[in-house]
Length: 500
Image 1: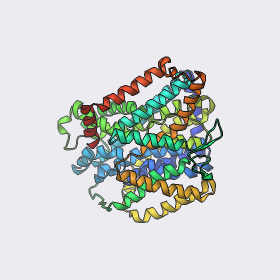
Image 2: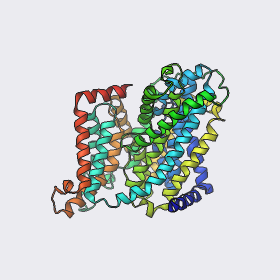
Image 3: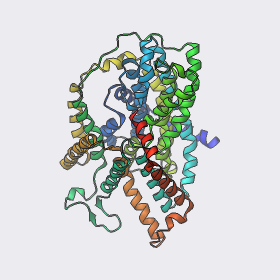
Image 4: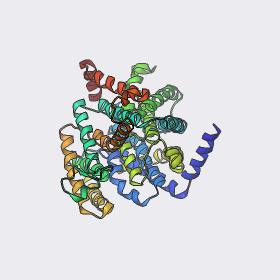
């Protein structure tokens, strides 16, 4: 306990530096803004901002990107409640009860519930990250190459199982992502593979062109297809506080949402949107005010908002301790760390204590910042919706091209970004989710490395993957997950849940 407190104090010392505070505030502001604006989520924003992280220290860059991620969970609730317009995917559930509360004259109470519930859940999740991080790191240090390979394979399969749409399509995207990650020069033999004689591919396909093309610019193109229909609600927000009855009903919902979100955030393929949906379904069955659902039940705001914020922060646990991204945003974080020359994994706590503990401390500081900048500035965030999207996208595209070119001062990277933009657009039209591809691209090279090490140590004996208990357990869980998803009833249940 004393060691944990000492490490947290060290983290606050790092996070409270002027530079890190400013970039944490910048991340929180950008996150809130993109949460408010429909169609521009944290995945697209972080992918677009990756080039500017080159000129920043690693700790500062990750603090800013993390602030964008959990800041978007706050911002999305504002427009979901006031305008019935979710700015972020995880805020879709909030519209169901939050907008009805606003129409009933309780917009202020709904906004206060969302902000306070998110703050409480974020604080609890930060404590969980701080407490579980070092413990999981010690466990991970006992892993061998075979265990790591099986763990990453399990992560990919769970990401496929929890992905929207067809599991066959999700597996296909993962395989394609792994294949793209293998392009370049073989580290052990020095031979080039899958480069097709193109010298620019000898170092592999860049992470930034894939992320920026498939998630950033492709999203902009898709948004241009949708007609703009934004109408700012004229109803006054009213008093930003809850009655005693509302507080009594919201408190247990926040606690349940925090638990659900903290658990689902750790799972590969989980994340904030799944946590918010799971919390809402739980509240409809468990809360005392379940008979009020559909008319503006405060539990339908408190639970999902707590869940999505808790999930956003606990998703850092597998990233920081095992080096495995649990969703597309965490895959972008892995890319940002690798760009900085840092390999995320179990040795990160010892090798990068400033980054690890500074990031954890900044999460709590960022949640305080978000609480302060959200409630008093509601009017400003709603006004932001009045900016026509046609004025935003040209400047975003110019910024993207400059950022991609500046990576290697090579126009080939711009061409690659355009190619992945087209591919990302086609994936959306064909209902192919791009997130599994990005996770496969990040984990593919690491899986190959651990597979080769395991085979070298076992002298080519494939049974090493079932001889080690940890590896055999993970492979068993992966097989069970695939078999369960192949069952018609379970598959139909998943499709129905995703459709809702």
